Length: 414
Image 1 (tube, one colour):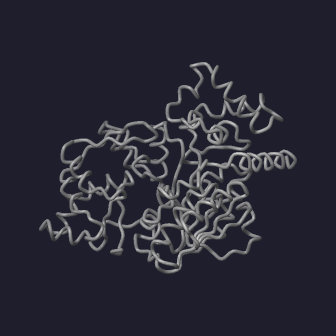
Image 2 (cartoon, one colour):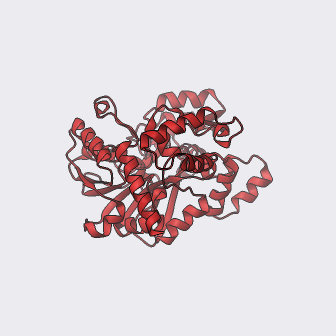
């Protein structure tokens, strides 16, 4: 067992030295900032710190398994935009990936990142200070013992801090693991480039009935990027999780789920239209509801979620309270308001799969009021409603847009 583990450890390191992932060109930093979930600063503030964290004060971040730098660069830029108190520690075992991430930081002129080469399993010996926030995306599912990795992260987290994680989801990856098994047999002892070449040949002749060809939500192997193809179909160590397994993993590390992203994907009512079935689903515990939604969807290919320590001091999600300030992720109030005014339904695409939602009454009116400065009480006053009436009318719109991860709350007028 130990000998096999050692071979796989070396194979994982070989992969990321040969094919840093995801592939990034540092020169592109001059034109755009890649943003996403988890770990967008405003998003994590909403979910973990009740929208009330002051990022002009000290805020320590660990990006565990930083890869080519997407999360580290995003967080460092966001923190730099808020002041000089934020600091990011990047940790990754691949020197090639680190080189890309450092080059990206240099293009941006970011000086608030510390780069460390190593595994998150090294955390107990690195003696780093506790972190307010930890990002770990696409890493735990590549470890021999994910439980040990998550325990190491939990031990590095401040009691009032939180984490943003991503692991592979089983149902949306239907077809991946049979092909991984086939390629493992066919490409054993080949070089990385040799494995990629053989994999491409196999895909050309793959029967149309193969589950990988039937899976319409997977496309990494079609991008023309060797790193993406390898990560999907040739990774030497890879597992996926169902919702109950995610909950077991985080519970075993003394952690609690705060929210999956996007929350609406994990609500059974998103997929159930029958009144009786919806009624039954509403009676279920949160974890059972999320597992039911996953089974109904069938297309969730990654689980992205926020967690905090069980019994810790992290505030948790922001609430729809009068003094909170709503703001749109994309700052597109006018365009979104026009869309909502013109339609009775709103279509969102999850992994290329369209889902349609009924537009709540008054949605366009509410969205048009959102400018990132006015509190809910300010908007209430402008519309001349009592708070109970205001909440009853607009909470459904907030719930829909927040569930789609398009709308967050904060307490400060930045």
